[in-house]
Image (cartoon, rainbow, N blue to C red):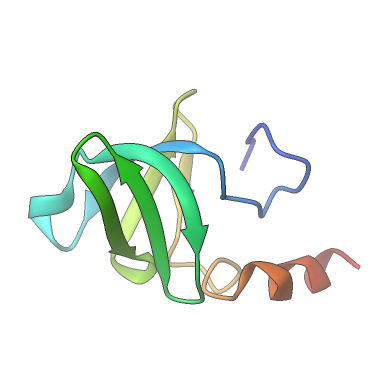
Length: 86
């Protein structure tokens, strides 16, 4: 995952698009990730804030890199993923 952040596990602040999902209605939604919990990503879109479950979707960043959010590394809280790096 090559994202323009200081940590490769930091999603907050990234502009992303939902490229694939089990819920076909949310495919194509794009926006900036403003908050993240253990199981949800909160995106600020042009139509307001959207809560997106991590385990049902794939995200792609602006530069085309696909972020698979169903991995065990991303289904943790952001501060828990930092412990992996230490």
